[in-house]
Amino acid sequence: MRNLDFSNFPRVNTSASLCSAEIRLLPEHFQVNEVLPFEADGSGGHVWLNIQKQNINTDWLANELAKFAAVPQVAIGYAGLKDRYAITTQWFSVNLEGHQEPDWSKFENDDIQIIKITRHGKKLKRGVLAGNKFKLRLANVQGEQSLWESSFKCVRQQGVPNYFAEQRFGHQGNNLNRVDYWFSTGKAPRKRNQKSIYLSAARSWLFNLVLAERVQLKNWNQPLAGDVMLLAGTKSSSFVVDNVDDVLQTRLNTMDIHPTGPLWGRGSQLVHSDSLTIEQRVLTDWQDWQQGLEKAGLNQERRSLRLFPDDFNWQYLDNSQIELEFFLPAGCYATAVMRELAIITDVNKRNYHDVQVISQDNTNNSE
Image 1 (cartoon, rainbow, N blue to C red):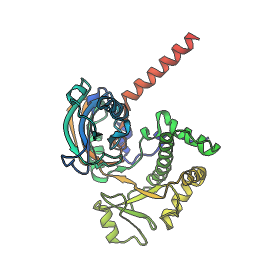
Image 2: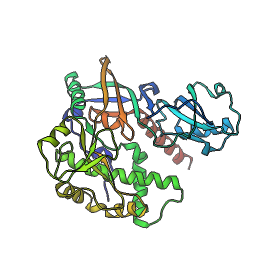
Image 3: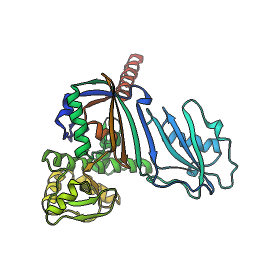
Image 4: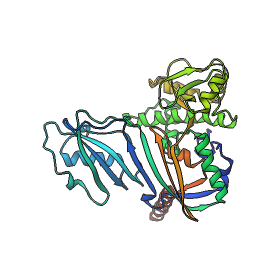
């Protein structure tokens, strides 16, 4: 049976295992502000709303916006999904062409505040995102301050492994179990959005396996012959390393370029030599997943193996609380940063588990 436990992936920072903390004791302890790559131009048939929400997921809010504006759900646009148990600010677009604009103030309540209203000529599409600013509070902090300082400096200086985080794989890794069933039986999910979620989970897991191996080998942030290097700040500007020289090493050390791992799909592998040897060895037992992703029509892509949080800062609020602030580009996870600082307990997940246990106990009793 395959091991699908995210917690087994290795860390770079040895101090992380000696410290611990809790996150999300309260929604305001996990704040996320979305950053788009451009600004709405102020005119057009699409109303753009910058909304701050808490205890609400993105899809639910999009559906409520459609009802409130009396438009079909397809008229609503947003760049990406945000955490429910947090205070998050993100943009939504509403196509009001041929419709009267409602009084948006009546859409607000204790959990929903509209920060800004503007217009644009086009719908806000999924994935059109520069990144997110995070403001996080760690509570019940345990561990020597010198160890925390060492961890903070480690993250600031060398970045962190760019793992896809647990939320990518569903509660208790359920998305991975469903992918495994799909690819082993050929019985695909009926719903299109479920297929997309499961394919993303499978692709992300294979990437994590390769990254974990390179962390173990201590070359996740070093160039290998045959590596594909990605230009910092881009998703597609890349080149293949034929020879590792001083110029290449300098560019890597100054964060100008990053080694990459595979996002599996159709087409020949982009790496060769030492890099190819590692990837082939790691993925030998996952050929059914590789074939499943190819059959689904996905194409080979690459993702940076390392992640540098921009504007990474920390502050000790008292002996038991630390506040973190940083910016991450789109597609990267705060969890990947936090796991390199300490053993972090997400209180929201723990409470969810407690509710599930109580529910199951009550069900058993009723029987």
